[in-house]
Amino acid sequence: MMKTTLQSIPSSSRPSRRGRAAKALLCVTLALGFGSAQASLLEDDEARKAILELRQRVETMRQAQDERLVELARKSAEESTQWRRSLVELQNQIEALRSELAKLRGQGEQLQRDLSESQQRQREATAAWEQRLQKLEPTRVTVDGQEFAADPAEKREFETALASLKKGEFEAAQPLFVEFIKRYSQSEYRNSALFWLGNAQYATRDYKEAVINFRALVAQAPNHLRAPEALLSIANCQLELKDGRSAKKTLEELLKAYPQSDAAAAAKERLARLK
Image 1 (tube, helix red, strand yellow):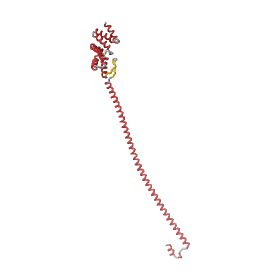
Image 2 (image 1 turned 90 degrees about the vertical axis):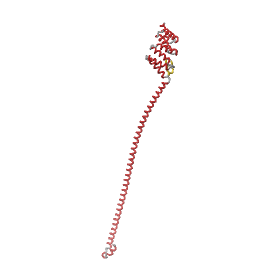
Image 3 (image 1 turned 120 degrees about the vertical axis):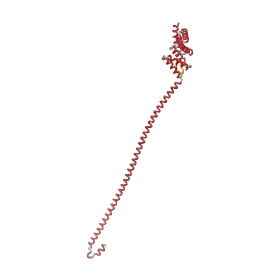
Image 4 (image 1 turned 30 degrees about the horizontal axis):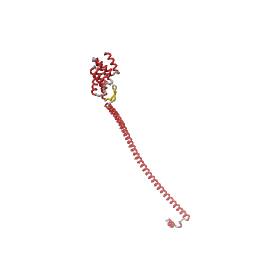
């Protein structure tokens, strides 16, 4: 286009060669400047685009990071909640175990008390049973130099009658001895019971009955420890009954049958007084 324009200019008005060269140089300079400007504009666009892409990437990364943080926070909150629940459940279980332990301890203490009470009742029952057995089983006793087995009830009744006599209850002791002799006619206590019954009767001046019981003792058990005393007591009763002849005869019998006894020494003195 420029070429057409130049051709249309009259030759007289065409510039000189130097001028054309200057123009050409100007055109080249303008072309280079335009190219540089265009290149600069292109570089700015790419830089802006790169910056935008970088921003976009940063924003995307930030959003992703935020989302991840939110997710982590959510998970952490859930885990924290779960941990709290677990801790509460664990505490509840501990409290339940403590309560159960206290209950078991209380039950154990109650069982221990029950066991102790049961053992005590067992000991008491055993002791009571042993006492009952002792009351039923014969026991070894020694009375007036004789040792024998006696029924507990038999022993108790004899000792009751004898205790009454020793307390001076002579009238009360007599029926106790009489009942004992009837109930335990074969008892080893019988001869001693006859002797003490005679003494109770002598104390109440029932001399005739006393003589009967003393004589029964001597007849049934001449070797009994109380036999010499029984003969001496018979003589005393006969003297109280004013029967001196019978008393003398009884004292002589005593000296003949039991010369070495303490009762024989007393009999000698009384015989001397009777003469």
